[in-house]
Image (cartoon, rainbow, N blue to C red; front, top):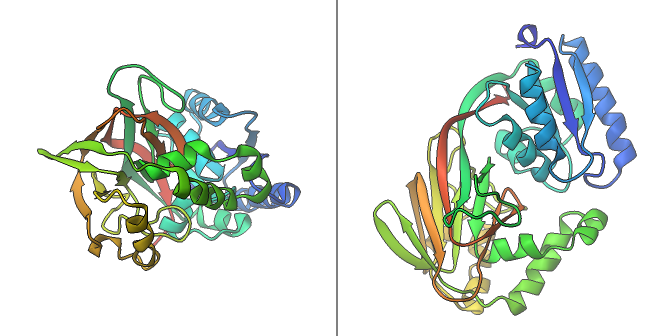
Length: 312
């Protein structure tokens, strides 16, 4: 693949995660690894939320041979939104607070080692998820045109956690900020019901997960039948409203056996419409980033991204 790449762009988040100086040294090492393999990569730091999307869109206009996303789930999501619909392939160097895609593809959490996998990688064309407001009006995290996502979307408690997490704490302690917000939400979240319409059936639930990957946040595996390389989601819902019922699911969640629990339903599909059943707002997230509030539609967009995957 290296022979096909004349002018790669490496987008990285200088504020992503801790130990930033060491990470930049590792990025420079990765650039040398790529150069030795015939891939010349120019560095492009992000400057604010959303700038990785702008940089990636410009890379498409410049006809770059590849865009390499170096960062966590948020940076990767922004790059995906800049590349979606184009033929410019995206490769990954995992960093930041968390990176679901790296876990899913078996990419090591070591920037120079991950860089060694890129030249021999395979470019695969995949579908993306899309979340879009039903009312035609954008809100925080999602425009009226919608937002692409690569790994996982959801609405309910996970949306409340992502929308409520303290960004300052996240910069200081990383993924622990999500755990702290999860504990906070456990004692204040009301588990409001949603109406969910998918594949000709209507359901009521208190959480929806729209998975493109087996891996979820942290060590958890929720949509264990999902695949990046299928043009579908695996959806999962929980119809139970009790705080104790959610706590009772934790052992099964940790073991990756959530679907065996009471109230859990899972199915494959390409579109789901979610609406709040009552007056209490229900928030959503995609790839660990805020995605507005219901009503929303989660749908598959086929043939949307060229992804560099490690050689099998």
